[in-house]
Length: 74
Image 1 (cartoon, rainbow, N blue to C red):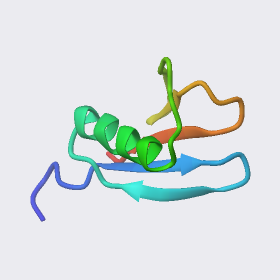
Image 2 (image 1 turned 180 degrees about the horizontal axis):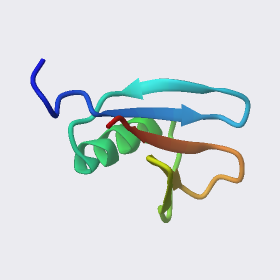
Image 3 (image 1 turned 180 degrees about the vertical axis):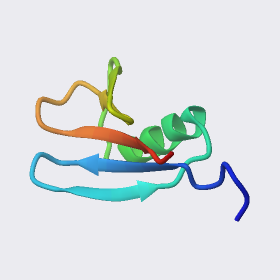
Image 4 (image 1 turned 90 degrees about the vertical axis):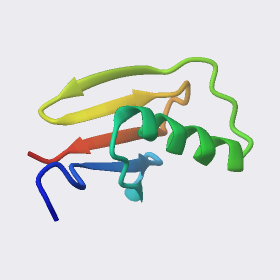
């Protein structure tokens, strides 16, 4: 492994627990994983809001309880 690899872990939080759904190399790739994840479940997201706090970016895709979280490892 060279520096900069596997810096991100994308997790899905269903309101009860979180599970890893991918290790994107960029935020662009993270969006694609989220999109595929939602498409597979026939979930329609009409907007995405995101905020970052202490190396974790949370993506609100319009669900009250379910979120995607992107962890950045330094």
